[in-house]
Image (cartoon, rainbow, N blue to C red; front, side, top):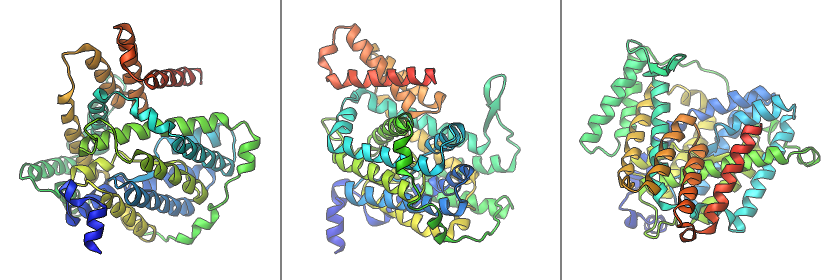
Amino acid sequence: MRSRLEHYFRFAEHSTNWRTEVLAGLTTFITMAYIIFVNPSILSQTGMPLAAVTTSTCLCAAFGSILMGALANYPLALAPGMGLNAYFTYTVVKGMGVPWQTALGAVFLSGVVFLLLTFGGIRQRLISAIPYQLHAAVAGGIGLFIAFIGLRNSGIIVPSAATTVTLGNLHSPSTLLAIFGIILISVLQAYRVKASMLIGVLGTMLVGILCHQVHWHPSTFNPLAIRETAFHLDLRGALRMNALEIIFVFLFVDLFDNIGTLVAVTERAGLIAEDHTIPRLDKIFFADATSTVVGALAGTSTVTSYIESSAGVAAGGRTGVTAITTGLLFLVAIFVAPVVGAIPDFATAPALILVGALMVAGSARIDWEEPRVAVPAFLTLVTIPLTYSIATGLSFGIISFAVLELATGRGRRQHWMLYVLALLFLARFIYLHAG
């Protein structure tokens, strides 16, 4: 049985083993465990019961990650997406006055459209239209993005009215602990310790406990509370109202954020084929779309691939076992959610910062001497972290690449879908500006 599983997940092909894959899955889970509490805190502002959303968040993250790992055999973990949950709460429910049940109906419909686009091969064609020259730029941009998030969560950088960001208080105990974590993981990486990320996070947390910087408040939690949101979506309401705008945003943002994450993680893991295509792309998109449908049924916003999966990849994860491990841990988290909440930002921030460093390394493969490649790559690289959006950075890269190809008389050398994609991104900017 074990050998069959190793054959199915292609352990030999990816030069991996059970220990590496399980540790990678644990690393991914620890870096994205915050979603168990952040997602419910945002969605509960719509009137959705907090305990119910907590359970549905864990359940959908488990379902999506396990499905991705088992079906597509990729180390990609899924969970309700940040940004999309804020749009669900603050724009759709609070801003437009749409009941949360109806908003869930719109999420469900967007997931169905996802499935139809996947079966029709549209999503696959869109991602194949992204020039392979930009793959390293997307990965590098996302590396800067998650490093920025880590620096912010650690308190090393803080907002500034004068300079946008500035150096934080390095005397703060939590910031000092984060710096300790960065040093610890760096030293472990220098010694080529595969579990450096996981050891660094847990080691930093342990020191934080000894320094009385980890604060945990036990709370009661009932997993059966999910009955208050499960199957409460209002499809008729979503169809009756003019939900096209809402569905479009759920669809568009998830589509291109997912593409950016997918390209970055597969690039970092070395899972892109020699012809610059991503194997089993249809299965990846099927898992993503199905998870969104299940998420709406369970009672949460759009489920999507998480860039924190790159932490697991950095820890050596190369197969679906990594994602399955993450998913199983989310299942366990349903019953021990308060314990998972004890993992502080200062413990996970160092992992995000150093994963970012590893991902930026791929930018060396960009042909910086060729302006047609260098300019779009640079725009992609810097706009992902500076606009706090993977989709926006990808938009700048695709549009500029298409314009330069046309302007230099090389337009026919690219697939026509590239220009469709560029027009879609341009329409996105026009729509956002009009909004």
